[in-house]
Image (cartoon, rainbow, N blue to C red; front, side, top):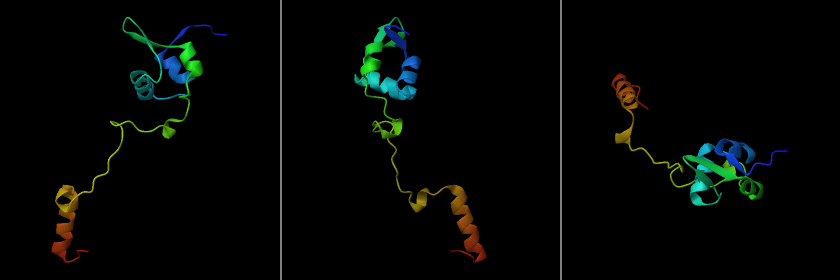
Length: 97
């Protein structure tokens, strides 16, 4: 049995159900998961992993502000060049929809 007090970020990710690197750093930065910095390395205490409730699947976690996708409608003037060119070609040939 491993009786270490601290685990590396990669080890903690594995122990927390394989969460992404971005997710574990988000948890550390938000204070949801305590961390310890030694020099330039960051570690997660074994007690924090044992009591953590972050083992939920990443798809069940809410998206953070910078990772949230936004859908915006394209106006006809913003269509890609190849679509506009194909439509004008069809219009010239008399097959426009």
